[in-house]
Length: 239
Ligand SMILES: *Cc1c(COP(=O)(O)O)cnc(C)c1O
Image (spheres, protein in one colour):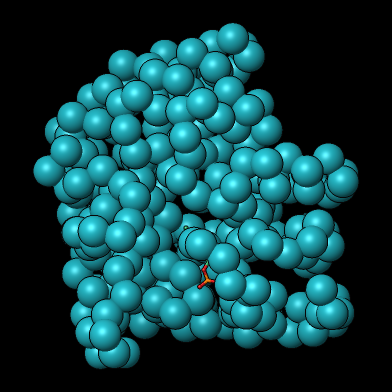
């Protein structure tokens, strides 16, 4: 990574200004939205920059990569998994992550609950919902979300903080923007419905990335997951 901390700080300042403007536009307080630095594919220095700047957490999409990086730093960071998790890696993930944002099946819930029980911890999770009906994305279908939530609430060792989604890309900027607005509104409505039905807040709505964070903040996002605007383009890899 050729990025210096000074350049990183300038980018993070600019990003925080973007988030603050998006909040102001809809009458929200800027502190309502956490900036999660997405460090996937970047060296551990990327996480160290985030901590030194004062960010609370980093997002990684592969368990093994995160385990290796986390072992190389003592920076006070929360490590969150934002990528697809296979059940056979649930135990490793429960051991090494502070929160798992990508829980999308009852099978995975069972594996994580058992792993957390064995580790003697209560593991915070978000349920990933395919709120934009994207055939290329992981996440439970909107229609299946209530059942997935019921299963999650029955897991004694999991703490359900809220929901996560990724908006589908469109053929052009206008279509991408329309998909983002629809996807984020869907997740917000789902959360509000499920919160009303269960009487629990499910405060966290993890939605919005470099390209669509304004739309996400307008729809109620509480966590934006940003990589490119902080660290630059990634070498191509499967998302
Ligand atoms: C890579 C990734 C991000 C960050 O995307 P950018 O466009 O680089 O900001 C956010 N969320 C998830 C789930 C990702 O995999």
